[in-house]
Length: 230
Image (cartoon, rainbow, N blue to C red; front, top):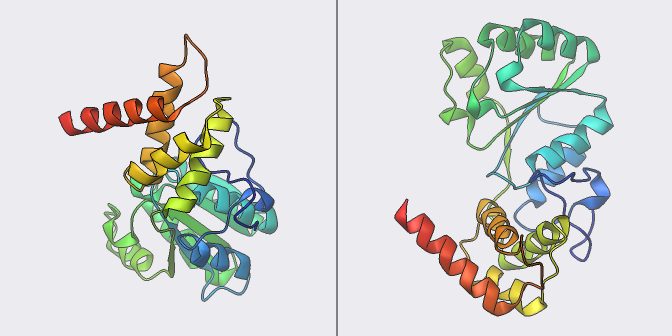
């Protein structure tokens, strides 16, 4: 993983690069990065990686996928055939477990195979396994017993890096004062960073120009007002 002076790439769209060298290590994600780097020396064959939208879960999952040769499956598409193919590959990333599971019995069978056949499994979600909607009692129990590593909300320094990267993805030049103003006054979340940059992109769509502190202040107020009205 890279140091704080290099680029940050998150699962926020716009053709992100997902290599280990593109990730900024910060206090909020250090524990999750350390867990990914420890593989295959995990406390068990399966691990849950949780964090808010845009926090880098898909990025870290892809780093692990490249190292392990894992198959990648969205939980909503994780049917019996897909999971059996993943077991044959010996490693699997299943993403977005909190958004529903296609075949709960097949996933329970895969969890059993993680020990019987030494299949490695990484599960990602926005919330803790205890909050996932799971109907099968045995599966619910197994998921809640998994080791969990979390990406925490970002600090101001990491938010600045996120904003710079998101603005660059959209080819939106910005002054350092504008980025600092946003990072200092916005809600500290990856999702809000994405929402603000999308709002800036819309504001500059017909009249491209540099993002200044005045524009940042205006868009930040508009986003706050819109969210307050929802």
